[in-house]
Image (cartoon, rainbow, N blue to C red; front, side, top):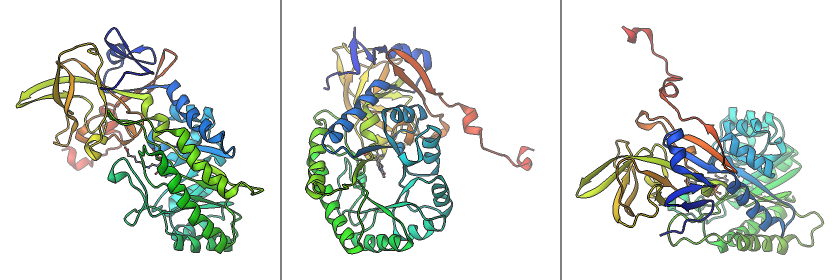
Length: 427
Ligand code: LLP
């Protein structure tokens, strides 16, 4: 069993987040509800920034918007000094609306359309291109000042097999050979500044891996720089920093990650008069443990096993169904209940993969109990859907005991919003 740690607290048997009673929030705002502690996001940001910037001062964090695209969260991270890494035009628009400066925005798309490339070129953001063929199309919309390509370093690591983004079967990045041609072409076109990027996997708890994959990127980068005759202005090591999800997972040692990565930078560039910037693009690490998902138990069924039915199924939190991901849970109103049992926690969607926890040891659960699902801040809301015609959840932000509803729960109007019906079908 996990220890309940800040920003979570056990007060008289009831789970609190950021000092606020979660039972009361669920009563006031309804469920399912994502509840985020602002201080925790700021703390996570500073943990990474301090660890790296202390060792390599040309360091910048670009928050990966796909992890959680709520604009209040984008604004919190902008206030902290982060840039934004965007995967598509709507994310670029969100970053721009959240007042990130254009020079603080990266565009890391893949298999981009011409329309997307045109928008990005017009906005003037720095693009991480996923292929030489994309350079051809991108440059038609104006020659960018700087260009960066995403390298496939040949190996990666991920919390699940599906979260490994490098190696022969990865749809991302380009090999050293293709990259040499791509940079040579960009140079020939007249591009003056160059970056190099990788994003080799997500949800990694092994600190040593980050040094190893950076080393590989450096080998590739060196070979490109020498053969093409360019220097890199920035080296972007991507995201991937993991958080503990299940009992037995250890915290990722960020100091060690920073040490391992910056050692490679020092080895390569210490004597250089103009060493490159080190960029990182964390998503999960910044927001994941800031947020719990509150979900009500609506039905309890005994049929060989005990099934606990909650209102946050795979439509609200997809990760367990998609990856078999483990999310720690607490019964908010029963922290001190001694009687325990093993149950399957399931959602209300008509799919048998709609299971949040299998044979999970929890306090004795009854209808009306409230469940808190931990680590719901990254790839939670952002991967939710309207499947089974269910409205998406609300999002609430807590700051020093104050509550602010940062996204209202959807209802039927959101489901109908864009639908049109031909007149002949109304008869
Ligand atoms: N940069 C790029 C280009 C990315 O594609 C991603 C995530 C990140 C940065 C941030 O990665 P992070 O620091 O969060 O690991 N849906 C999965 C995670 C997929 C990550 C996709 N790319 C999950 O629920 O675990």
